[in-house]
Amino acid sequence: MTLVQLKHLIALAENGSFSRSAETLFLTQPALSRSIRALEDELGQPLFDRIGRHSELTPFGRAMVVRARQVLADADALRDHGRRLAGGEAAELRIGLGSGPGAMLMTPLLGQAAQRHPGWRIEVSRATTARLVQALHARALDALVVDVRSLAPSAELCVDTLCEMRGAFLVRPGHPLLAQGKRDGGVTFEAVRGFPIASTPLSDEVARILMQRYGPEAHPGRCVTLRCEEIPSLVAVAAGSDAVLIAIRAAGPGLVELPMRPALEVAARFGLVTLAGREPVPGLEAVRGLMRGALRDDVTGQADLGGGHRDDKLD
Image (cartoon, rainbow, N blue to C red; front, side, top):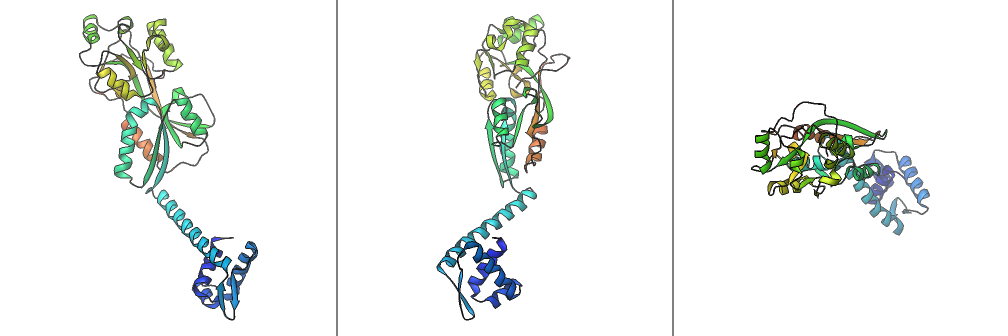
């Protein structure tokens, strides 16, 4: 059964005549007769009663015409949707965002879709990197934006690294540690431990670098007292209390970076992650461009943590 046969069925049902239907369809009458006969053979029942030169639908034929019209309408809608996708007028994106990208990218992503791409449909998921990768493998998501250093090596993943953003200890303006850091030429981790420490769940790499810089007590399992997946909530807590936030610097533009001694020197490397070999989903190029514009380490007034090799992950 083909869409062409269904078109032939509808034309004959509307005209009631093989000759007139064939003329409308730009076919010969024998060709139309073969098409209808093949359809009846496939369905196992006659579609028309031939009464002289006139053809009338059988009860089964009438039911088939109703369904054929719906099938053809659905096919036209699919064809139109495909053209809109190809032309960038429509997109259906299911994006998973890690905690860092989620804090900085979700609102611009949804806002751009609402303002510039009203024909798009976007679904955003927030979770740990491990859960987002599972959803990507299950094809429940089309792409991820995460810190790529949190990913286990896999030939099944296509990783496009787009930006690097450094981490910091962040506090509210007027925090007691700022005066201490100015007086002493930097803030020690021992001094930070005197206040609540907030963060998203940190990777093993971050735990390693924290302990290298500040000793065993800097392990997140020991020092972090306020932990959740949502950086905006943690930023709000730090802004309204004496809590110290460990996060990417740009996630808290209203906060002040502590001049740590020694410097933290840890960075997140954000990238767009898709399944290798999968056809690119329309709209991903716009997400890639938005990432380059929104995920930037250009917060004004940030302290210089010093040089050094950035080789650790902060999600």
